[in-house]
Length: 100
Image (cartoon, rainbow, N blue to C red; front, side, top):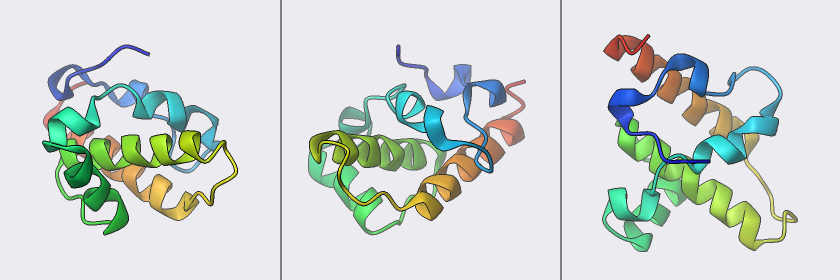
């Protein structure tokens, strides 16, 4: 999936946080989270500490969770509540920006 800048992100680009989570992985890769967060470590901290607050931080944390899942061979534990919280926050922020 190609990258989508925050100002071009539309609510319909974001998987339904209350629905099937099959699309979250691809959506997570619409941002270069390591670059946007400033480093791998900074991106990891956003995800591990569940401290993401801004749109960019939430997208970076989601990307890190997708990378964590991929590098575990899909056998790692995925915190679906955290994934849903991130998707919900991202969708709310995009809608608040008026990117309809």
